[in-house]
Amino acid sequence: MDFPRFRRTRKNAWTRDLLAEYKISPSDLIQPFFIVDGVDIQTPIPSIEGQYSLSFDKAASAIAQAQALGIKMVALFPSISPELKDDQGSYAFHQNNYFVKGLKALKSKFPDIGFMVDVALDPYTSHGHDGVLDKDGNVDNDKTVELLAKYSLLLADSGVEVLAPSDMMDGRVQEIRYQLDQHNFQSTMICSYSAKFCSNFYGPFRAAVGSKTLGSSIDKSSYQLDYRSSKEALKEIAQDISEEADMIIIKPGLPYLDIIKQASEFSELPIFAYHVSGEFAMLKLAANAGYLDFNQAYEEILIAFKRAGATGIITYGALDYLS
Ligand code: PBG
Image (cartoon, rainbow, N blue to C red; front, side, top):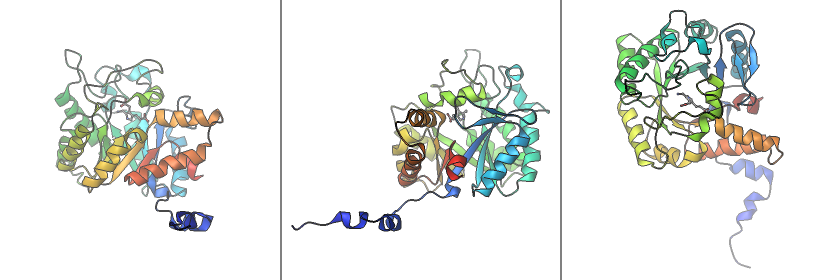
């Protein structure tokens, strides 16, 4: 028989390992943590298996563990109690905001691991939108951008190195960059959620930060991208690059590999895929039902992100995977 023998290199584990083009290393993974006010709190988050609402002291232990495993950056999200929320998200700017204050103390303990923090008002607003509303109930772009830039300065002052605007307002990267530079935070980086789709997969996260309960819904389609198009995502990415973003995020992850691939072909910026809460939950539920092996399926997904061109992945399973 005369045909090429492609199976020759697949026969042994060592050749397969030797020739594998993509591998996951700890520096590829960014681990999110949810932070609540208080001490000695470590409460499981039912909607995101394996994740906890942590007080800062407990978050410190988790971050130390992440650092020991070789993770280079963590993403920290506040989870604010409902009585502190209002329609303006004012607690974000409160001088006693436990999150902003606690970040400063935490950062001083961890100079060598990056902190990334979302810039959006949804953890603070009673309605759960990422910004403030105008009199017609629409998210007010320019007013929101102003507030986000103000919040960015508070985070930068706490020592957060990577600000991640996740709000999808127009012009926010430019304004945040401008304000940072004006206030001597030239080295604070912006990792923009450039292509954030209006997705059905954010439910477990919204339940975790209390911006919506599971089963209820919120319509963010007037600012997040419509998943029936891809060109608009590329337009957003190009715009954020021109506004001097340092890195970009594409979100959700797996259903948007085409966007990651296209972005990696035209953009020189590092791209992070956000493997979001709903994607993670689907995998956990399937694994818990015995339909697949979590670790193996998870690794397959991480590799898919790398193949598509992602520099790294924001993912809830990072710590467990590396442990
Ligand atoms: C908020 C924000 C969301 C997520 C990250 N930042 C939710 C939303 O836009 O409503 C979702 C992350 C996830 O589902 O894992 N701006």
